[in-house]
Length: 266
Image 1: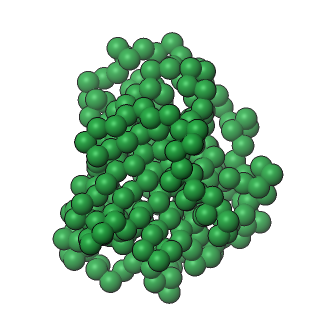
Image 2: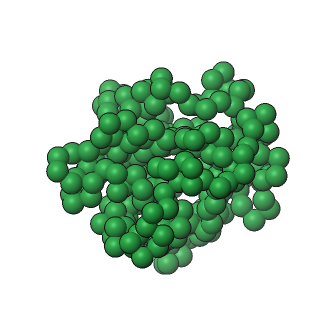
């Protein structure tokens, strides 16, 4: 997403418009999965490329768009529904609709776990909502020995209101996982991991109003920026996270048989 690949910048209206177009367009996308209201598409050289774009869509009945928007922002609630997450926290605030954050997640064993530092920006637009991010470097949050630092080239959500009290959620991601991954991992993301993740978000949306009523219901700094108490971060502190500057591990020798049984729940 970074312009020219060198400068860290906060996405503007044209970036959000481009992201929305990618979510809604079918041109150049190959359908990989379509069952039970969930569709997954991919874009890229599927046989040789681990840095694919993957796009997922799910229809969410009985979940208003603004509720799903809150779910995706609320880091406290994320710990309730995202079983793949190891840790997530906000590092600092850039503007009223942009911040820097950290996220780490469990990969299917014996793959090494991954983590990110990203610049995230969000935009409510009428009845629709968008959240997008890309990887950056922050001097106080360098790569850790216990994780492989992955790179989000572009990742985000588009939530579109769809009738009374319903919405459609798109998730689009292009990530460099920093590793020569076996082909089955890429296929498994399309066929299993992505659909299951979307269903988890949908279920989280159904349960969120009840949870939020009991957990600081008025606190939504993503909606009310005056509630944001994060320290300010300057763009000058950040630089673009280039994949080629990170460790690249070779995991191509791992087969699907290596997966621990617990990871089939991931």
